Length: 483
Image (tube, rainbow, N blue to C red; front, side, top):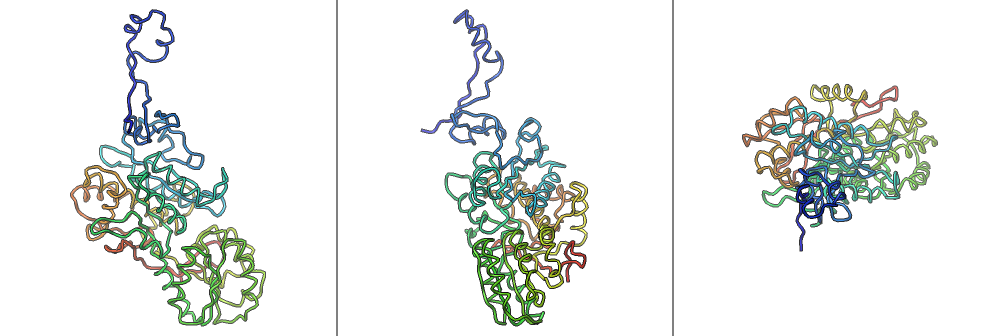
């Protein structure tokens, strides 16, 4: 039998005295006019309904205050759980990213926080605010969990314990697939919305197909690898490349992009896969005995910054790689790649890559200025995609609040994401937040332009199509520029 929360109320002191004069223990146990904040529970949703977002169901089956998971202690606002009275009816979002200090996703974490801060500048309805809890899935950081285990456990914690209605991330395709499949299990109902800024695998296109008018629960602000691979193949052909070797990570991301590239490339292509970073060196060595030339290219596709830096550092030890064009997957357009591959700087002039979106122009410049002001750092392209992804989750919550009778489930938020084209033109920013609320309150759609570029969603596939930037590393080796 299900146990609903049962509030325990203290008896008045006069009644206690009448029952037993020597009840000093009881009179010291509780206030004569307030309720004791505990209740029987089976799941944390019971406690949130009774006491608010800072209450969870403990191991003894009683509600208690939130104790943040060791991997999920990065919270905005910082006092979201310590001063819950400041955030009545808070809407909780989560993020799943890599918090490593070197080669991690800190810029993406900052971008998600900046979006929530912008939404809170005027709240939702009656000042209702958002909070975000950032969870870390880097491997073996505070425990022995793999990145997959950490991502899945983080997702369960965010949804089941904290009641997060949407998750921004995960950052990689394999983790996104693992998290999505876990959250589809009935024990995690109601399921949360997932909006990834960087999971691009083709396998994710049909992981959550639209059912009639009912939207899917997996969205992303980056286009799938089918588009990225076609773009990369076209650029290689335009550069006069006739022979290429592709070194790629086996898995949903690497395999998907490699095969999409194979479908679009008209020259001779050899595919070599690695399981993990330990296998990169042997493949770099193997390819180094080939003949270099202006028409020859090596393509490296890895899902992690550390894999890209390992490839470049190892390749820089062979003359062969100085005589070929090197093309990198979209993961490589990150500041961490440059910071971790300084030993390979002599290869930089040979490197090219494609990246979804074109973060430039007034919308991006405003975001960049706000980001610099808040964190004293410059954002990268992934930060722009993450900022857009977080705002998508916020827009979904607004639609659910106004048009779905305030039901903040992942599905209700996803209905809002179906209304992101064909209406009033909106730039994704805090400055347009009040306009978005006005349009959604009236039941009208909006048409968004993200800071990462134009975001146009196909109404059937719910996939985004976007222009691409074709980039190289700047001459001073400190950044990226479009060609």
